[in-house]
Image (cartoon, rainbow, N blue to C red; front, side, top):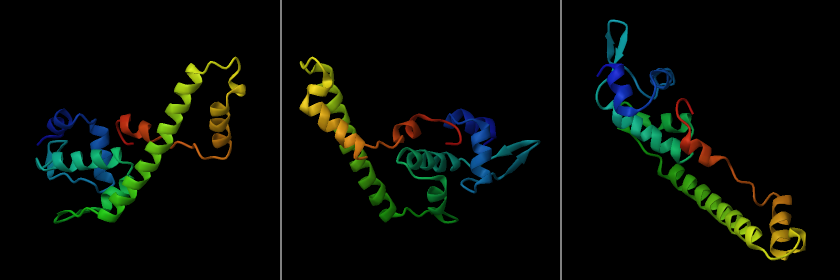
Length: 143
């Protein structure tokens, strides 16, 4: 497949493909003139990279799972990432519930609301630190 075909099929810019190749995540099979060519299986590799990135894996963590024989998925790493996502879901749920309550709270001043004050205290103690995971899910390109 010509790099333009991979760009079209994957939705990734050519610069990202070149970056992934530089990082060793994918490899081209050669060149047709000045353009890189890839085996059609590169689309599956790109899909795995996308899944990994969406789950919060770094490119290095993803790269460690690619072997010459094919993907070797690190199950312990996946379980660890799933646990991290569970914690983020818990924190985001608490944040969402607090925001909904604050928006509907009948107290004349939010600092008179016990629920709102609990949310503020939790934030002060660092218990509501939300990682920018959702940004990684929507970013394109090298991220």
